[in-house]
Length: 132
Figure: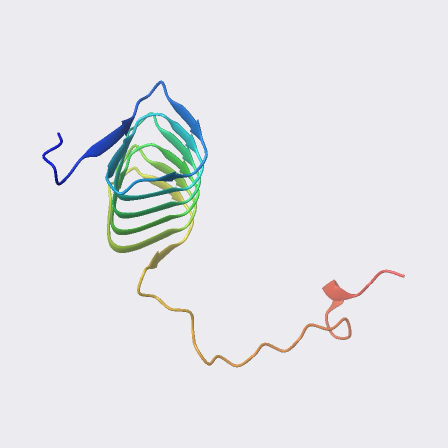
């Protein structure tokens, strides 16, 4: 499927990769990856396992992920099992998908100009007292 403008790469179910992957093309992963993935578009097969962070413009997840996901358009299918935080612009989750982590839109910024927290001391907090 190469027409000069767009191509895709496939990591088959019999392939296991240890290391980071960076692709300027669409990536389809059916195998196992231990490392961070950065690509334009990611499609993950049901039997695939990814252990690492994922950054993509679009991602369609249907396997297991242990790590954070950041995508503009994210689809989490019912067969997906995700352990990590999810950051997105647009999000679709099928009923039955399992996600153990926090969801936050990419546009969400940490609170600015919040008053600084009072430094912890061992004086008033029994959990911070040192045993003698």
